[in-house]
Image (cartoon, rainbow, N blue to C red; front, side):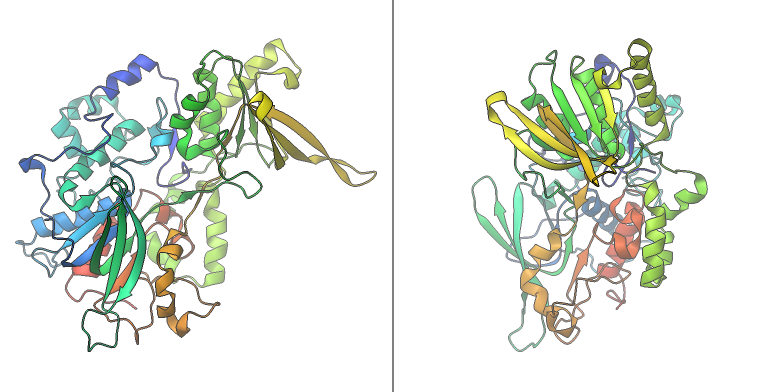
Length: 512
């Protein structure tokens, strides 16, 4: 199943604006900048602790990964009285905190396109695969919102992306008491709580409140880093340019830049995956007089493979298979599986785009005159700013039109009002956060050493320097060791439960 850069896949369908607005009106606090205080009946079992207390767990980032951990921890506390050993945790009331840079819970807000649907079953929500009886299942969300019967009538396992984000926000609101929004983490520093101890037994987390600049310092024995990916802009592009927009900011930044809906803008889209194709398709209706050009390196847009057997690579149990493989075999396996999630497009969208292009051919065989085009075998080599025209100029290398006489490839030049870059994400934010802890890596953090995690997502640190009672856990950046599902929604429910058991369960921190 193709990813919309991470954690989900979507399909864009033609929907009327009014049809979509009727859904938006049903979603509470859709335009709120701050999370509303939960009612007493909608508070989780997690309780806020003073910042100066030593916490059992601090989660940095409160996106789907940390939310799944919060849900699993709440469910474990709710089930503490039963006889099941699988969900039992040692702490009756753990001290936890979640720190989130955004002012409220959001999930891919820049790609909430009209009619976009999920491409994973709603059963792969934040709870069902771990505990179908949890109150945090998608079905219970529908029940609480009064839409369960209506959703059944749709006859689909694939909710609108807009609705699924609202489901996750509904879950997140249960935990408002223990989440500090609008706080950006500055550092994670090793700490020794007991003066006589020779080992690190906690970590100090410093964050800055974006509203007033106040720095808050907390200490925790366990820290989870789950901050998601940073938008990746190709190195030959200006990293901060008002006319170069990453796909993650598409739906908000483009209307702010291109303000006239009927203007004959020229827009280039870079990329060959699901996000690029969705943006290319969406621009046709968003700016009906605009000329759009999709620039791809390869010969053609390619379909994703979401057949049943291939989809088993997103099963929770597949993580064990991937992690057990030898590095060379694992690398080959991941390369073979990338066609399910990277640089591929859902077949339905491919067929729709092809039909749109074919319609242009009916009246004009000259592709260079088309309003919407795909330029294949192209790679942007440089960019010039054209401030006098409020445009940028793309210099593109055509790898398929080499002059065999002198071996020089032909270059194309394209002047555009905006460039949409759908080139994925970089997932290395933990490296900067943990820079002061690098000496805790095995072998004293030599340059050849890198951050590595165990099967239970715990960072490998020198046991002679770090106590068994303390640990750092990484989420969403372990694809190379845990498989393609690491950045996706598919295994969140199961993985959240695994993290809770690893940190709080009987005999916690069992794995090396």
